[in-house]
Length: 125
Image (cartoon, rainbow, N blue to C red; front, side):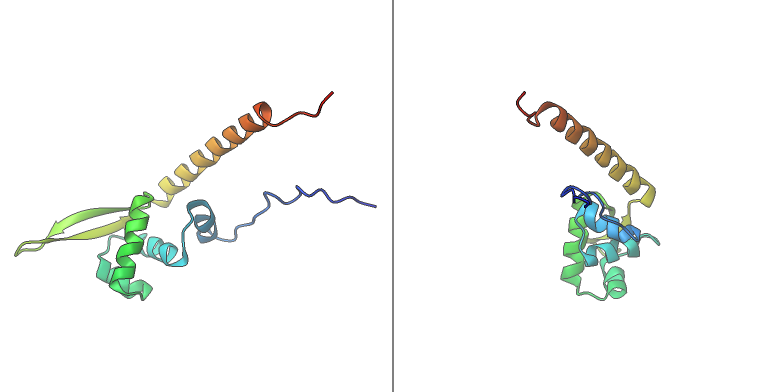
């Protein structure tokens, strides 16, 4: 008879594509993932993104704001010829995002290992 270890599979979450991992690692929603990937092909305005992901302007602005705060997009102000400005957005490269995720994973691993080694209770002897 085989006993089942309740910890088996605790870290076995599989990923089939990069968007699956972005959802998990960065806490992104589907609309945020769609927006990030739409921006990988080059810089775009809110209106251009709205057309690509088929969402209303305010939703796109909220999504871009969240992606900007998470450091996944950058924005640049452009001026209209008659005054005023608008933003153009572009995605941070997948290479940079991958590097940041790997750095975070390494910090998490080291902190988890330190916690288990220093703070996890040992059985009484």
